[in-house]
Length: 153
Image (cartoon, rainbow, N blue to C red):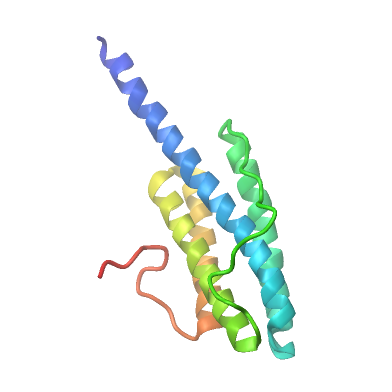
């Protein structure tokens, strides 16, 4: 077996890993768009504009990720008809907590994409991770040392 053919499965595996991570980021964006429709309906009036901005940002990132997945030669994962929220959202405090949760989830997905990708996809994923981490801090009032990475306990 030549060295070129031996390298091919590795490159295919790499593309597959990037596609999988991009699909996961797209799925996280779909969930965030859904989640922010709940946040916007429950958050205090003083934070509604911020919720709308986050909703719009996630819609734009969702559309961008769908194009990225298509550019990688895959069919973008579709949004679910509905999503199960991680907890009941009955008021503004719950909405703030949900917004923080959504941003942390999105940051995690983009962290995986940063780890898997190279070049422009990696740069875009790093930017999306940074944006999600900043929004998470705004919603929760605190942050983590390395957003997008799962803490080991």
